[in-house]
Amino acid sequence: MTEMSDDEVAAQIERADRFTSDLCELLAATVITSDAQRLVIDRIAGTLDAVPYVTWCNVANLNAALRGEVLSMIELRLRCVGGGPALDVENALEFFAPFERMWGWCAGKGCNNGMTCQGGARCGACRTLRR
Image (cartoon, helix red, strand yellow):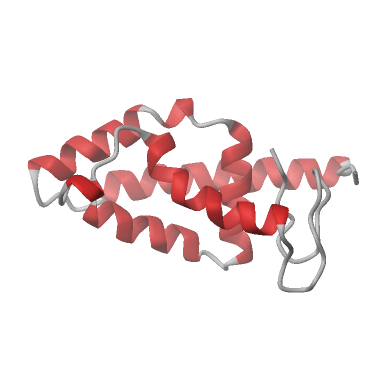
């Protein structure tokens, strides 16, 4: 297992904190079009503290690797929540579950540069940390 340097840890913390700040701004700026959407967004916002910090690190890394597109996907999902049973989530953990599959692919199977991330090691492309 490759350990992170102090500079890498500091960069990771900054990246995760910046991502959560951007997410909070996105939640606040979402245009609400229905009571159902407002209810789901309130549930997500009210349960952000339940999301483990390692999840914020992973999703922030994924966002960085995809050049900000994770926030774009989140923005799109926020527009749709509350639109029916398949779009209803109970909390922030459930909202972020689909993203786990994305960073799980990198952490368990390999990255586009052919390197495999194993048990906390980082590759140059995604720098995703395993839980």
